[in-house]
Amino acid sequence: MKKFGGLMMALALAGGVLAGCGQTAEQNPAPSNNQGNGSAQAPAETDKEQGAELSGEVLIAGSSTVYPITIVAAEKFMDENPGVNVSVASTGTGGGFKKWVVGETDINNASSRIKDSVIEEAKANGIEHLELTVAYDALTVVVNKENDFVDQLTIEELKKIWEPNSQVKLWSEVREGWPAEEIKLYGPGTDSGTFEYFTETVVGEAKSSRTDYTPSEDDNVLVQGVAGDQYSLGYFGFAYFAENSDKLKAVPIVNPESGKAVMPSDQTIEDGSYAPLGRELWIYPSKQALKKPEVAAFVKFYMDNVAEFAKEGGYTPLPEAKYDEERKELEEALK
Image 1 (cartoon, rainbow, N blue to C red):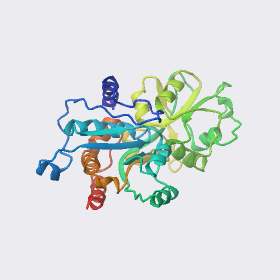
Image 2 (cartoon, helix red, strand yellow; image 1 turned 180 degrees about the horizontal axis):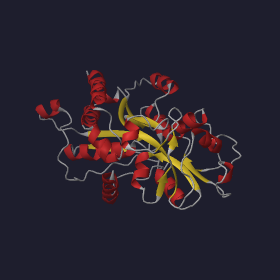
Image 3 (spheres, rainbow, N blue to C red; image 1 turned 30 degrees about the vertical axis):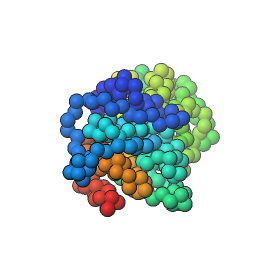
Image 4 (cartoon, rainbow, N blue to C red; image 1 turned 120 degrees about the vertical axis):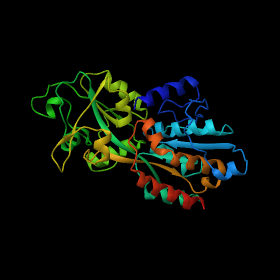
């Protein structure tokens, strides 16, 4: 997981990456500097066999959670295919789908599954989706490193804190014995798939939440907020916690079925014991965009190497058998 921090710093220095998760004004190209990793596979055998050089542009937006995986794929693909510009914008899952349904982007990164209403809107615009699962994530609840009293939280306690019109202002109102200090809350903005998943899982209704908290589509802003306030509480994807574990503490969450408090980790995410906050992550290429050789080649390259990209992005890969199923879905769509 430490690779993610080094890679993102290198990309930021290259000046071509949209490093801020909340920038939605335009899609900036990912950098094409060579990171020296020669393990990437050729993206499209037919193109290589015919001696054709790929060119064009691949436009991607969506989830800040999936962004670290896709930016790794984009950078390595462009090393192999310098004639193709892969642009990756971090807009939040919902913000990305708004572009995708009208054909402004080729692929949407998503940390919550596409809704039927989005599918219908896309179809009305002549766009069909392909759903590809790329990794596991754990939605991680965090507190300040100096917090010495929050040892675990239940889903009921999280609901009490985050539900609409919550009257909880102090830690002592969450659990007896905790200090009478004000809770400073940080969380994703309403266009975020993480926000949608958390509210549906914890509160019981998607996008149903108290509003008196500090929101941001940029997970780094949330990290800084929690790290800067001793009595703060926030939540975001596991990779951002792992990258900042020196200044944040992850809170064990009580599994409602086992009754045991479980920390998020690669193992507990994969074995399902970190429940109910473990989740899958997706990319959604449109079938129309896949007709473009550069998009088809990029998505094939992505899925051929996705386990590696997931690890470098700080996430837990799926079992290889599951990736084989995803690749078969892609092969069918490319026929």
